[in-house]
Image 1 (spheres, rainbow, N blue to C red):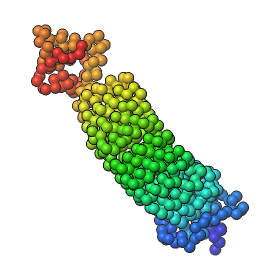
Image 2: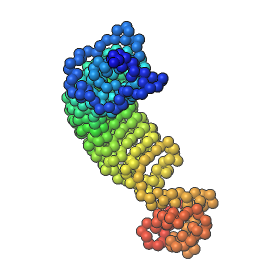
Image 3: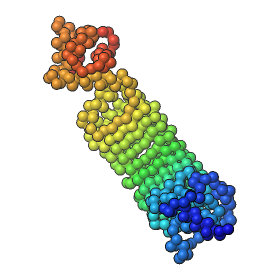
Image 4: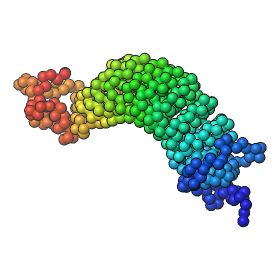
Length: 454
């Protein structure tokens, strides 16, 4: 029988360009040593390669580490040896699988982005990876989301962040972190200027967690993107975040969707927008933002000159709130808003007409909204009708006066319908009926045009 070194060589050859059968299992089920605490029999410190190991390929180092630790190699790792982005999300790596990866990557100079989401790493596996980062200076982005880290894992991340000089993006979503864990992150990042992107969404931060993170924002010197969606920050937490944001000079994107934020929190964030001119994106989707809350938020939006994207979909907003937002953006001559997401708000004709006027003056403005089909046809019909009249150097008033021989300031809808068809206005039947409904809102079969602008 071949010895173990020959067996490792066979697996290595199977993933090199010369071809062969791939013996490494892809997305295989974790072995017993991967799933449990079997890693206790191994030293917690990573082994240091000797001179011979350093000149071996990454694949060789990885296969030998897997053999020694007793885990199944992941073929995706072996098949992407030259890729800067190593994506091993959802591969059941486990704590000991993480140890094998850490040994292989200690001195790697190719990978810059390491994706390990949903791999049941727990604190043990994360510790192996953070030890690896003490010698690997090339990895700049690390995704450890959904890995059952909890408070023990937060402590591991805290210790890594204290010595971090290279990792700029850290994703830690869905790891069961609570307010106690927030204290770890706040302490590690309060004077940090290396990390620029931090994802702490889908965790269990409440009010005191928000206070810790707010204190961090007041002192942090580097974070540009902060995701705190799917937590439970509520009033005290948002108040602390707001206080920190007023002093923060680097944050550009803040995501706060799914935090049960209402009018009090909206008012606090409105005050932030009055003072903070660095924030470019604010995501408040899926909260409890009502028309009243939007009015309070707009107190800050009315003078803000930096915010470009505002997301408010899946909130209990109505057309009134949508109009308030749009008017605020229009009236603020220094407004930088380019995208307004109110995609779940059903707007009426007044909103769409105002939006149409706004787009003439501010073409870059992208507003996402919902509407009833008849509303869209109505506004479209009116636009077509006005364009037709403009091309003939006529006004709406001129058109109706030509039909009103007795100068009663009234025209029957039947006469109007007939005149539109005879003039060959490019409207289909549905658009024509919508236009009539626009002019005859009370369905009296009579259009009173005395108040129309000439």
